Length: 216
Image 1 (tube, rainbow, N blue to C red):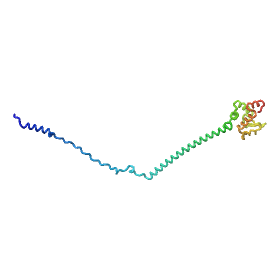
Image 2 (image 1 turned 45 degrees about the horizontal axis):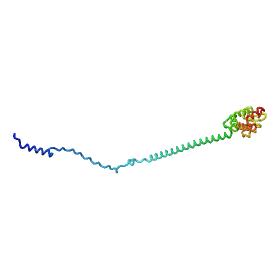
Image 3 (image 1 turned 180 degrees about the horizontal axis):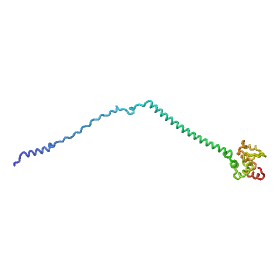
Image 4 (image 1 turned 135 degrees about the vertical axis):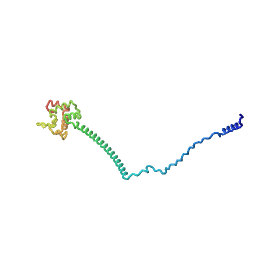
């Protein structure tokens, strides 16, 4: 078979076509649609939330104001009450302190505790406070006045008229110790101890004399 002269020509044309890009069919690319433009926000037309709220009714406003006033008044009253309580407590404490001071001054002045009711205890306190006489000297006082009156403030000698715990003779001498000498054991004891001090020096010296003479 004789080669056809057309084949070489066709081969050259095919090569030229491929090199020039005519042999490839271009593919269609999908087009992405452009985003729709966004309209700008119209903020000028917005209304604030506070401005959009309805105004309080006058009755509600008055009620709220009244309630606030009541709360304020209650706070003031509580503060005043607390302050008053503090002042009262301070006054009570001060009064108690002043009373204790006055009582101590009274004990100092009398020489014994005014609450004491037993005449023997009154005598012990006076002896120690005023004369610095201890228990040994009280023993002698106890012997003397037990025999004289048995420590009775209203004891009276029907014969001589001697009166009271120390048996003062005459009885009116007791008045130098106080106006209540007829009924107050402390006044009588005060006078009797001074009498013993002035006349005998000590209770035991007075007892020594009485033991030998029957009187003092």
